[in-house]
Length: 183
Image (cartoon, rainbow, N blue to C red; front, side, top):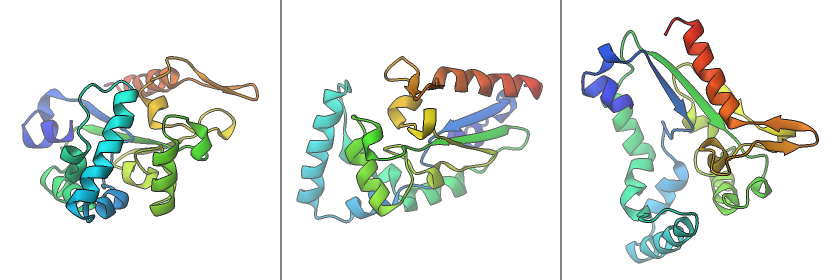
């Protein structure tokens, strides 16, 4: 979306850009993986692809997308695609409370957490931070919000100790806020 707005000349046709857990600044974890010997990197990619096939992705290709998640790639992308004048930017992050917060994202959260800190199982809160940062979604009773929650993978609200977090409500709130700004 940022590329379309700033590099393809679409800014006059776009009122706002909302970024939810986008790796705007890349991933130091991915930097480390990219430095592995080629055979080890491919082996890691095999297991990551297998995991995502189990989650429903019919054609995952971990190795092909890895370079776009490095900090160097993100830095170059950010320099080449600055925020467009007249477009309202908003960014949001999710963060899991612990690796136990999401069965599907536990191992990613654990690894990224050890290397970089607070994350949603794929993207750190620090990397998601961009212009107009609106904060970190933490879910119901501090359970946390995973990347799977942000894309509404389960199609149900998160409940814990009487509290409810519904990602659909968050997306509606985002739209209402933009409407209040006249967009």
